[in-house]
Amino acid sequence: MSIKVSIIGSRPAAAQGVSRDVSAVDVGADVQSQVGNVEAVCLEVLKSRPDIVVAEVPKLGGRDLEQIGSALASQPATTMILLTADRSPDTLLGAMRAGIREVVPMPLVNGEFKEAYARQLERLNAARGGRRTDGRV
Image (tube, rainbow, N blue to C red; front, side):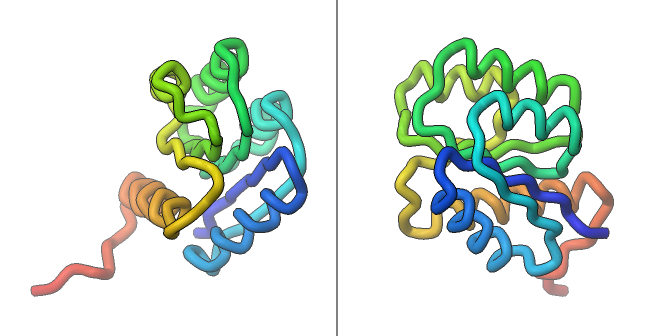
């Protein structure tokens, strides 16, 4: 079964770069990318119901995190990875409370996003009853 991934970036270059990284980690993913803001992220979660949402948002406010939290609460099967330059404790705590699974610092360096995406992909596969292929006997 294919994983549905929605990528929303504040700039076209950001969305395209993340899309390339997702395709490198998960060749079979159904990837859709677009340019948008927090409202676009929430709308995507509510209407498209993707398995994984990757949102690149430069700066978040409390209201933004409340909107995202509300959208994610209505779609508990959707996992979100947030890419942001805002690494303040308030933002990290708010993201956690909103139900965001991963917060990856921008700019993307050292493969941090690919690692975060791989963790969420593994989590999603485990929840679907998928088998791990890296075990040994």
